Length: 150
Image 1 (cartoon, one colour):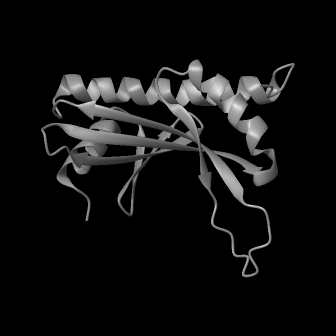
Image 2 (image 1 turned 90 degrees about the horizontal axis):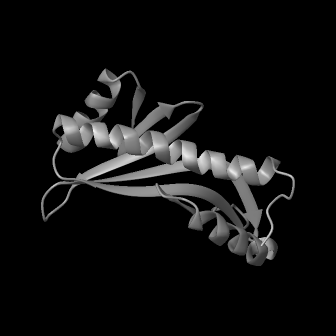
């Protein structure tokens, strides 16, 4: 069952022309070519906490973590609307001898005072900028002349 805050956000985003699909405990918002997972819950101190997750379909193995972390740190310094993080991927290896794999994700958190029109407009703008900034930074790094260097 989705929280009333999430339902209101989903309705507002849908009414603004975005494609929104309910998932187990959140929503998938189609923004450009990306699908951003959105989760919302009432903040006990007031307002609504919104978390955004963008799966970039990039994976790195454990043996390249040092270089990747340095590169991600440099990229994160230029991001204003989110951050790149590594999330371990659960793989089915009963022996446990395969190297760990990590997914590269974009994440952002936004606190909304309320769910009025001004705050929902701020959420739409944050969502737009988050998606554009994170995907742009990754694409420039992957397709740029130097690649990911630290």
